[in-house]
Picture 1 (cartoon, rainbow, N blue to C red):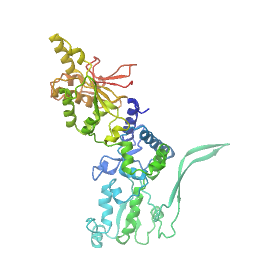
Picture 2: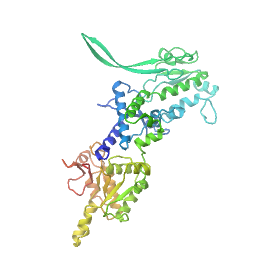
Picture 3: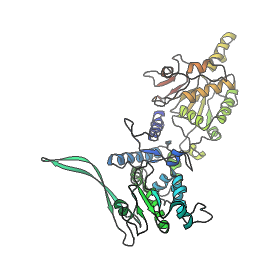
Length: 474
């Protein structure tokens, strides 16, 4: 369990689909996770992160979030790395750490910088703060603040004080004859008023009444704040936004806790938990090289092996992740030596299947034909064991073209990652170093070929051995 390529590919596919954000117009919108506002607008920190969808709060959705937590626990216990790019705020919530303004900044920089910081006390750490005169000049008596969540749905303000609310779900039923018919799922919110609270903001927002005579609401989803009331309201706004996905994260926490003992979870920092489940996005080529072994017929100092490492060092991180996915059925690797050593993970570079037949040939023409055949061949991978076969290419340029073909045209075991922009035939026949031309959708559809019943997936023309293949049957 946890060693087979299809098993790792399952978690890779799940991770990709969870972060494949779908709009409401899609036929089957999953949308459990959405890009953070920083991701959507490409501002601030963590521009590539995702968060639970704030509006997905039905019983069915919470069950799915709990199942995601179970998957994370299974991946952690079987040493599988899930390619989830969740916001650091989610990992803090999963480990029970307190959240503050800087955490909200990592989700929504625009809100903090443009709305909240001007309302906070000034000083060297907050050059955006407004004094009374600047506040009145820019906003007049009131500053209008939109009450929306990260998905632009209405935000319900939390009341002043501590955790004044709890949640419970029940099925709404009505009697039809002598039977009860389920009408839907209802979220009950139980509010616990703080006797020391001067106001219940949620109540004032819902009925548009005044707030201590100094702040009011104007229409749905907007609150107007006076200058004198700002320092009291900003913390409530921050806490309300940080807890917009509280139900979803608690469901994930329940699922994770059903697989990983809570005593162990309490010992981990948010960063450690993320590392154990998701690793890191960046592939360290030198670390991979330290944990690479070579077959008995492979010389680590052979020219084509030197070409391999030189080209991998020059690859972008996206290309490196695609290369690792081709060879190992997951896009990420451990980020430390200890992560490679336990469990034992190593990449094995095997000898070319054509080397033995060409090496002993005394026929010059036959030997030249074999050499050309090696140059035309593409790498072969056994994803179950992280084995990769690299033909002994005659030049660095040819190897670069063949490796680029592999990372650009590999669309996964299930064929879901189709995003091919070049035909294999044109790339193999193009002059070395030349850019292949784009192909049509009809040409792309002709590239995929699977050998039925053998567990071998090949890409490109149906004329082995000139195709890259991945052995998934181990």
